[in-house]
Length: 311
Image 1 (cartoon, rainbow, N blue to C red):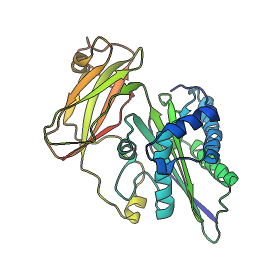
Image 2 (cartoon, helix red, strand yellow):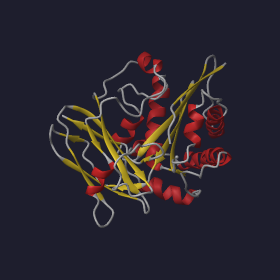
Image 3 (tube, rainbow, N blue to C red):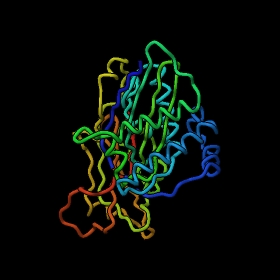
């Protein structure tokens, strides 16, 4: 008998054209981060087919296609392997890390939103064949899309119109299979960011939004540095928050506009006076917000998922 559990969160999505195997193989060979979780050519081919399924789901809801992201796929592969072998499920790992932690610690700086699924067998084993991987990935994605309101968080994540990339992860043991979708919102070039700084150490985030976009708002959310969790504790959690209630630094539209240079790049200073983890979100809009005197962030796109640990 097979048992299925689905866990997820709502988020935001955008456009891109389909990619062929040759293009993705070059990207896969060139990416050196998380090299131990690199997809084989065979698995890359399976993911291209799964990408087509994801984009067909998006097309039904008038959302533009997403491209496959290599780094996000490796982040997803790592989570899948750890979850299948450790027999846990959901959005945390046993180091206590949430999706945006894992993506940032791997070197990602864009905004990420995750769908997670787990299936396993009692009284039998998976055969490990490529076609079994393909069927399980398609079936689990189909479970996401079959959700009905108000319990349709995975579906809403898939069809949101601001996402323009996706990482796909899969891993199978003899009795457990894990499948993850990591949707990415990439609308800016973000410079190198230190992952660790000292208390009150100032650093700068350089970000250049895509043509036609302006930075609208910036916020740093504080949380404690993740701590190890037991398998049982991980399995008790469901959806994850993409923010916290503690926001020690904020940049309003009229403040953030001051950091824009003649080339459209924003060089934004940050420093934090307390040890912990800070999750920096930067939002963009199509209109120059510098003359605003009031604002709200509804309808704006989050383009960063920067994580900095203050020691």
